[in-house]
Image (cartoon, rainbow, N blue to C red; front, side, top):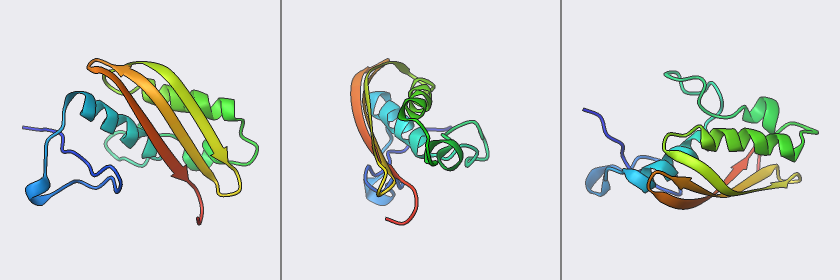
Length: 123
């Protein structure tokens, strides 16, 4: 029997002990999208197609924000139960090498929004 455990939203670790909870529906979909966005392409052995090529194609010198947006959009839409993206905004701080992804998406269970910060290098 398998089920999905809720992850801590700030550390992305499994909440264990008495605080452990299963997650489903809208909360699960939001969690799945965030996990996929934070995964480096090829990092997860059971499915090396999950994630984004953060170090080889995204956070590289001269990459166009429109290209990054396309990869992020495909990643979100490729997540189970995501039907469409209603808004997507990317903000890149080149000095600190931090990419902020804000979006609103429609899932099988309704609308959800998320904000994710991704950084490369020493911050």
